[in-house]
Image 1 (tube, rainbow, N blue to C red):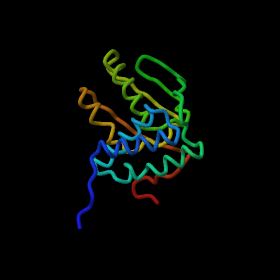
Image 2: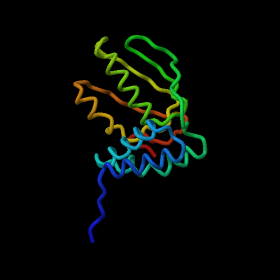
Image 3: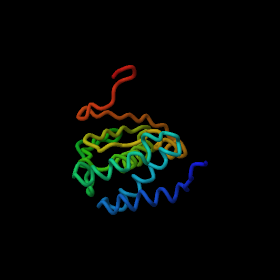
Length: 155
């Protein structure tokens, strides 16, 4: 018996519709859905659509912000720090990468740090668009508040 297959655009539309129905602003819902599906397409199924149910629960419980923008804490030509205000991590990360690439064209490089972001899903899902624009990205994530990711070899 074969496993049913669905088109990425259908899955993205499905995820977007659920996120919007939960109250997420359309742009945030679209970006989050795209990153989740891209994670699955890259084979990182633990950080793809498998996260959707948890994200919906986080929205429902008010632990993921539905609307708004990050607050700028510091803004220098090649270094920016945001307070993510618990906004959707995929949307914040894509916005931060867009800002960093625009600034890197002028400054040679740019670093954006986001505190209090919600979960950012599959890190590999962000790399292709950056590389296609001729940039290099070093993307890392840490959440000392949650303490939910053990270091390599840890428990």
